[in-house]
Length: 623
Image: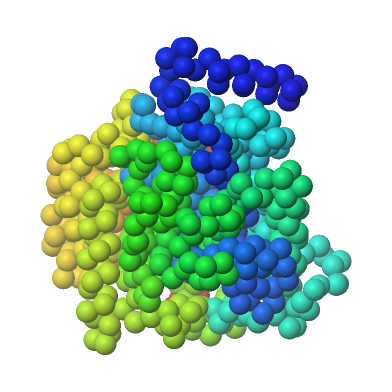
């Protein structure tokens, strides 16, 4: 079958000039020696826990050797701390927040005519394979790869044809962290593991960390096999090799969090001798400039001599038109069944975070990590038992509206300096850069997920977001006021409840929810908002009213959305209902009655299962 495929491929390449198809001339005229092959080796859910990055527990000889032969990026970042949204950034070359694809597994349609990077490479004559993860978070009406799947391989290309190939390994994924119950032999004994300060010292956390280091060693061996295979094929001297992880750490407060523990990844690039002129520094050296996934696709196209489309939002960090950047921008939206809106900017020395859902904790009750990670369950149990110090307990408490970290003296980002006079100027500068980025990219993450589907209608959300109908500057400014959790903004929030635009009404209601009891003067306006035409606005107003003692109208409004809303709207209502119980506002028995018998698709069905199995002993203690 591979022989037949290669013969057909050769025939098609030969026929391109006769057919007059686009890119035919470049595909045929460019000699193989003038263009590099490119191999992407990717792992999952691991930060730079490698020997070449200085991790004392690492045993990663193959990647350490690759680093000695290549260059290491000290400040490489996934733009999102979860796999699907991170891969959206890679496959599209754009921030998912520009496309409306920031939510985990949201299956957003792409604009008509949008070209993905494998399609651009194939049009330029490259043979493109992906083995085997896709999980792009977008719906596709075509197949962008020459080969995609567990057997996809660059060997299937036509003779002399350059290739681009991706091989993805899952051995360090979150699902592989927990050791088998009877495992007793660890390469690094659990009692010798160095814990980050945000993790309490429990046996389960130590065992998960020890096994995680073992799994990273397994992953390193898999990367070594792929590199050895490239050498056996006689292709190492014609191939630029990238190794990186899809986002950072698998243990709690890594994945799903915008700190370094969730977004900073290893990135190693090896250039063979004939392409050494493209390397930014000598082999074995560090590159200090920040780079992120939105730049990775543009860089790939630049190295392969393919023009970067105008709609791509990254910039190449290698090649003739390489451009340095001073900071990277990070985001998170819904992860599985739990909503959150967080945006951040990270430069060489600092990270600034804007939490647009400060009423929610970092450690929301996600079903998946609670199921697969003993460390997550152990940490939560220690918190409920009062055995966590303030740094460890912070993960389970509502977030601050803003975070600002000086990384040199605080690599684990546990000392939030936001608001301190000594960092005021630096904080203002990064906050201004973040605001400018949100507006320039027309960030769609400020639109609730259910409302976004309705505003986009039959089209794509990016078309709506880039039209005058989306008042992005007003939205960002109001969201900033809402997230500030400051009573002085209540008048502006209350006025927004009557605005003509549903996104602004939503942030008015959300700001009242964030204020909690301090939003009491807005009670009449919130009660009127329960009749809003937008289900997302009604949900936010209902949860806010639940905190103001108006439980019956709040639960009635949530129940109506649960019964008749779209899947995204139902999920929002279920989250509000769950947190009204967790915050001690709604009796568990009443909440369980409301969700019993619901027939829902994932991820919405996870919340009823969680609630029906819950007991009041699982509620967090008051701060």
